[in-house]
Image (cartoon, rainbow, N blue to C red; front, side):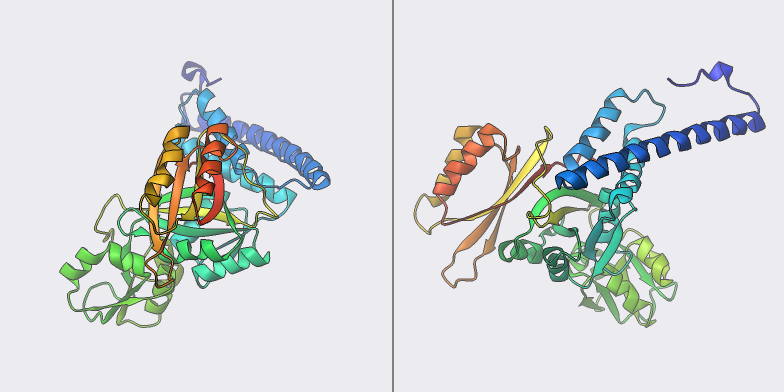
Length: 368
């Protein structure tokens, strides 16, 4: 229950004494929770259960939001509890998370937002390496971008889902702000802007207006662009403020993305042999990739089972099959979980109409 403000001290020293007392109470309660988490961890070890259950953590947060009396706002409550659960989870076993590095990338930020900071960070040089590290077991989870609100699908991530055994176990999205960073504090003498191709596309208009004729140099990640800019005063980077701080760069121009609402969606991937599919949470997404024979009515055959089962399709992307026959793979997101009866029915019927069918995962929707 919230404190009655009329009973609180009215002077700063008195309020600080109260805060110190509450902090000690919080510390005792947090350690009590940590001890319970350790006990849960021992049971999970005996049962062989996964340490990280995204649907369970989401349920905890949503349950707390439902009973939160304030004044703490719900949007501030979630990050606090994610950090708390991350620290408790680390007592069970360290969670190794691979992401597109180096330090300071939006992929790292997405990993920290989702798993909390009490993880073992595994920075990778490319999206391919994130998939390899997670497939090989040197990381428990991988974090990869899959789509951007300005530039659309991240093609490399889409293609790698076809050739690796990994499943999607969670998602998160970030409001992405790109900043022009360099060793100097002005725009003079810039010969090239280094960034991930998606970032260069998201800042196309700004670059055309303010740096016309300057080379746009694609690199593996925005943080890699910041690293290069830190070594050469003729280079600039498009990256986060965190990356600028990491490499000692000046913030020359903030927020240079063309769309101020620019967001990137990331998914968490894992080996299904090591990490089971999250259980239904009540607000889930099912992702799959399919292909159909090149014949009249084939696309209609994909949609009819969804309509008949009452399943809503929330995303539909196509990628060339690279067969030379104008064939395509279709990446589909459905509302609901594969274990829900109406979704399971739709998937079973859909599979019969597909020449290729791969369930990528069922996982809790991002509710940030």
